[in-house]
Length: 78
Image (cartoon, rainbow, N blue to C red; front, side):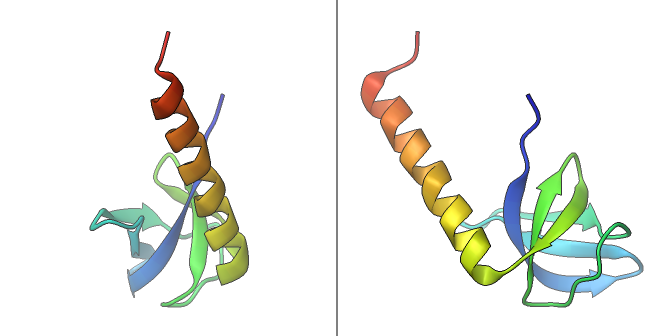
């Protein structure tokens, strides 16, 4: 299974972007596959921004991730 996580673009330089995954998690990703500006959101997989997202799409995806993680932690893992 492949996972892609939304992140906010905070800086762009030389085809790379520093993105914020939230809670202080910053990473550098390749943005050669998308057109994006600082302040916009991208979907990140394996170090590449693979799709630009609206803020609403990013926030909804992050909300769903939080719900899944909370449900998993309340039920424990097998």
